[in-house]
Structure formats: C-alpha cells, structure tokens
Image (tube, rainbow, N blue to C red; front, side, top):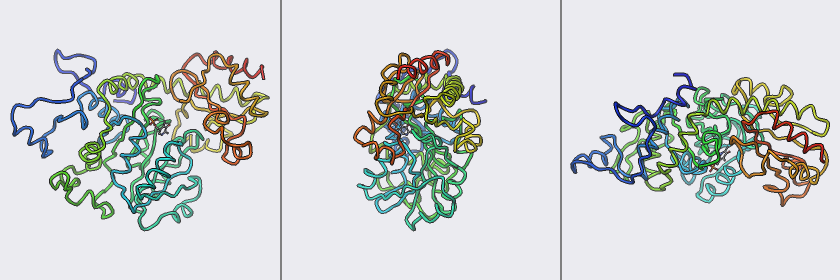
Amino acid sequence: MRIETQCIQEGYAPKNGEPRVLPIYQSTTYKYNSTEEVAKLFDMEADGHMYSRISNPTVDAVEKKIAALEGGIGAMCTTSGQAASMIALLNFLKAGDHLISAGNIYGGTLNLLGVTLKRMGIEVTFVNADTDPDTLQAAFKPHTKAVFGETIANPSMAILDIEKFAALAHHNNVPLVIDNTFATPILCRPIEYGADIVIHSTTKYMDGHAVQVGGVIVDSGNFDWANGNFPDFTEPDPSYHGVIYTKQFGKAAYIAKARYQLMRDMGVYPSAHAAFLLNLGLETLALRVERHCSNALKVAEFLEGHSQIEFVNYPGLAANKYYNLAKKYTPDGCSGVISFSIKGDREAAIRFMDTLKLAAIVVHVADLRTSVLHPASSTHRQLTNEQLIASGITPGLIRLSVGIENVLDIIEDLKQALAQI
Ligand SMILES: *Cc1c(COP(=O)(O)O)cnc(C)c1O
C-alpha cells in the first residue's frame, strides 16, 4: 500500500461482521480462561493484553498504523510528545552516559535534555547541526551513547542532514533518534535515511485538529543493541525474571523493552479514547499535510514579496539556507509552519497580531486552523531587544502556522493586518 492508503487502511482489519470503524476498547483489564494463559503472558511467551498501562487493543491498532507509516518494526504510543522523547532516550541511557543533540530543537526537548536528564546524570552536548562531520565527530566522548535531532526543527525550520547524522552515530556504534513531528511520515521517513528510532509529538499534524496531546516512539528494528555498548539489552533484566531483550525479542528488542520495562514502571500510556481520536487524525493526514504545504508555500511567497516584511523563513523558498536539504529530505513540502519578521519594533508586530481576524493567537502549531504566535511578547517576553536578537529572534518575528483554509482568505487576512501597522 502507498502511504495515503496506509493512513486509512493500516492497523485495523475487521473480521466478518465486526465493526468497520476501530472500536474504543474502554477496558483496563482483559479476561483469560486459565492461570496458565496468564502465566504465558507474564513470561512474554504469548501475545495478548494484560493491563491498559502497558497495552490496549485500540492503542495497539494505532501503533501498528504509525509503525507502518514510518516503515518501522513496531511502535508505542505515549501520553505526550515529551513522554515519547523521555522514554525513547531512557530506554538506553543511564547515569554516566552522554548524548549529542542538535542545538536547534524544540524548547521542551532542550529542557528535557539540558535540565531533567542532566539531573539524572545524563550529560548532553548541543552541537550546530550544520557544521562539518569532523567538527561533529569531535563532540563524541567515550561514554557517548546517542545522537538526537529534528527532521524539521521547531521553530527554526532548519532541515537536518539525517544521513550525515546517521553516518556519525553509526561510526560511533550508537543509535540516531529523530523527532519527525513537523515532517510527519508523509513528508519524510527518517528510517529510510538511517534513523534508528523515530519519535513524534502526535499533538501536532498527526492529530491535526488540536484535540488530543500525545506522542509515539517508532523502532526501525535496524540498530544492533548487542554491539557491546548497551548491556541492558544483552544482560538479564532482574525486574522481568531475567529476560534478555535481544534474545527474547530479536530485532524488536528496543520497543519491547520500552513497553515491558519502562512503560510498566512509568505509566504514561494513552487511553483508548485518545488513540481513537489520534486515529481519526491519521486517516486524513496525507490529505491535510499536502494542503498545509501548498498553502504555506503560497503564503511564504506572498510575504517574501511584501515591502513591510524584513525576512521570511521557510525552507521551501529557493532563497532559504535549507532549500537544498529540503529538496532532498522533504521534496513534497516543508509543513505549514513559517516564521517571518515584520519591519519595525515589537509594537509593530503586536499591532499586526492584534488586527488579524482569521489567524488566531494560540500557543500551539500544526493544526488545521491558521494560527500565530509572537515570541517577543509571549514565550520570550522576558528578554530585552538585544537578548532577543542574540537568540536569533527579532522583535518583529512571528511564527505562523498555516492551516488548510482557502489560501486566499489566509493571505487577505495577513494583507489587511499589514496595512494597519
Ligand atoms: C510539541 C513538540 C514536542 C512535545 O510534544 P508534546 O506533545 O507537546 O508533549 C516535541 N517535539 C516537537 C518537535 C514538538 O513540536
């Protein structure tokens, strides 16, 4: 099946007379006929659901669909994108380990890596992902165990050279973890370029309607966890009567360990209802992403040609620094997110924001309604103008998440607001 078909058909195949639409299995628990069958579940010798903190049939169907979309061997949903990043990394990192991350990543992930994981004894080095491989290689230490980056960075819209990062990670015998939230598997499938683990905040385009926070971890099945660097995969797990994940689960060792060990202990599994909503979003993902991309490109071109605009940052524009990487990794479009700067001061940007009619001011991106955010008066409001510029944010910078309305209406709204500055 091609990806548009997979969005609709993968994950759930009803048998004769069963509901056509994926049912919401609103049950915490599952009934078995004998103690022996339950024992087999606990020994992980039989497939089946035990308890909805670890798996659930509705969530399972959505996991299978997302694994298929990304070309992975398995997937596990989580209650948020943040939970996905945390479990994806803690599944193989521990105190004393080090990871290398692109510096240009989502603010929440920066905090997770730089503050919370640091408190757990996991050290991070943030690198400029655009530098050459030799400079990047110099960031590796003897205890480096992971490399991390985003396909399309939120909010800078930098495109990651995934093959360069994968080559470095694999040269050092460690996995590459990619956050593919903005691209979605419709625009880029990082596993095809060497990523070992792919994560998403499903809160964004996958859900697409701004109704449900969620996340997912996808395992490519390609990384060799028995290469000597990751003893937790090759030595008996005392919390699971001595299971050796690489022996018991083979290529699916990573995702099995994430579920049976970490999800069991941390309990950030989504509800059946949350998964049902996510599935509705996934069914139209290909269609929506196509429209987000074509609308965003037209809006970016309009802004690029406007005399009141200082600059437009969208990798689909030929003048953009990441245009060539975008042609390679996201040839069908660069998502609906654009950042641009209005000439003038903070006040000019605020006047523009407050006169928009269609585009709503929200602290969110990547759903089907056009929305805007002004970092200088919201997420970065504590900073002075000088500090803003130092962190790459001009006083007039606006983050625009282009929706799937008629693009002429979106452009007219921007035009009338610009006219009122
Ligand atoms: C939003 C976001 C996250 C965090 O996801 P939540 O679902 O909000 O927890 C992680 N990565 C990226 C790129 C995001 O945009």
